[in-house]
Length: 474
Image (cartoon, rainbow, N blue to C red; front, side, top):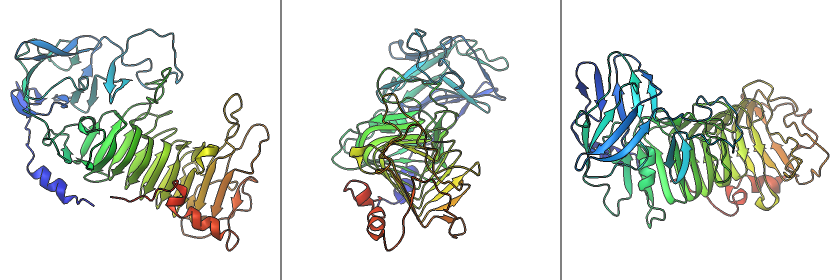
């Protein structure tokens, strides 16, 4: 296992960037005239008091060598059909409006060209427009940002910066992300975009403590570890949900804050992922094989964490607003905690998949005081009715705020429940005392010894649950 000492060594040699004052009123990042800037940098303007975002005007970036226009943000273009994430969650395929769109990891997303937090306006250029070894000038038309007498920059020589001459050298296996621009990359997405698809040696992306407000999406990469400097100090998040980024006709979901699709042999360790919107709003969506989550904190809303494939989770915490685990995958949870409103999981195990969500030595807390472990709503009309192969198994689980019925509701027409695994063994309260299971839903089952010794031995073995994969935490 690589030590965090590597991170300290890398950071000790990283380049620092200082802010410069433009006039007496604002600070620019990168500073005017800054050198060795990362091409994935975000542009920031800090004012004496919070600015407001205008509804017109252009932000342009030029290559200073030939005055070529590199990128444009047009503030008259709406961000989304639901710019505050509170509109319809259904796709409107007749809508022909142009919205602010960014290509992230190969997929199109609606996005905010500017986000204001406190006194700082962060400008998000379109991804991968800047290059190494170039000098760029920025113009901002009046009306883009409103604060005091700020009138923007009409000349592309008013705010210039130069990027690093080159990126990480060929064969590099460890890179560092720092929000202040002092390392190899300034954004998590920038480092992931750099990582090769199928490296011969494992790649590790180290994220320095900081707040990384960015929408992260990537696909088809292998042999990759993303590791934060500290679980509570390294925060990656974005305001996103199914209203802000409604479904397209095809392709992956666009509503998570952080998503990986079609990946293999990936590990996320020691950082926090937040989705800042309510609704159908995952903190994380994983679609992959042999994925490890270790010492992670996930804060989502409805469907707070969606799973596909095979996933091993240890010493982590998920908070959600209902169906907090939308489970299509085979997932082994160890020493982890879920705090959830309403139903903790909606597990959609299919027959061929064999296993669903298995919790061993975990803690589950119902935040409303009368919540359930899993629900199976009526899904007639082309969808597998009630997911009759759904599997949620709790072994040595501490609980609070769970209704006496424990499971459900299971709704809709009668169906064959003989393959349904809503199982518990030794469910306890937070003090370790057995809970009353006498009112549990009739399609659930209490496991016991010695009768179920074989089942318990199998389901406490991640290799059995994860289809023959023996996970190793790096």
